[in-house]
Image (cartoon, rainbow, N blue to C red; front, side, top):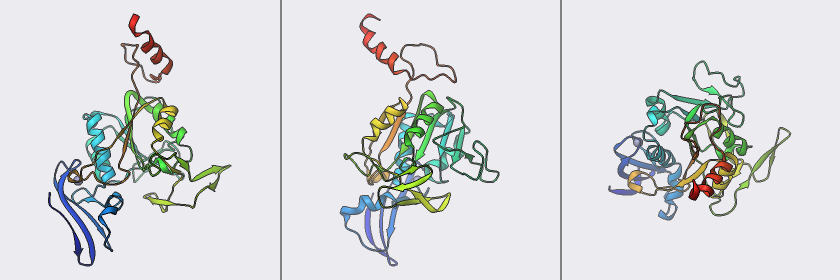
Length: 288
Ligand SMILES: [Zn+2]
């Protein structure tokens, strides 16, 4: 568990021993940079830097995997759709160990719904998907929702493709914290309109990076719930010795609830989320 920060071969390196929830074994977590930084900024530095030396995962990837194991320990047996994965950390375990795993990328050059002949991902626009209703038990997105122009369509589409009892589990940087979410860019008749200076994150599909369209705050919980009908929980775990120590390391778990009135499983193609019947069921409970 020994932690240390020092210059080694001209690099400022922080390292700590711990257990990686993705590797399920003792590992070293390490962050590197050129210049020394005050410990008060470590949590910011670590978000994109504190990697597991065994699986290469970042804190947010371990946080997501931790939440998946917590809510869906049987994930290997489930149908999982992951949007825009990289082959590393949590995504790598899903791809290697879950036979029902489907990965998709936003690829305008490839017809929607078709599979890339080499890279084997399915071409999907998260806001207008070609998957049929109730196709998946889990949908995973990792730092995708800050890049969408119509996140309300994406979350509604994700909920549509989920089986009741399933969930959308995601990371997204909640940079605005308790302040309201704010749009940075929007699409007007197909043209990008910038409301804030353009900001980009790395994108494995494009050397230009991905434009950040939204600065989200904790009010994303209400936003997601309103547009999808799912029950949204926010999971925060902070523990340096399991590599969960960074800013914006929250995980959102959006569960598509089963109907409380029916003892039968909802059939495919039929939405199980019916808020009106849920409210009715709750209010009628004393006489039911
Ligand atoms: Zn690891």
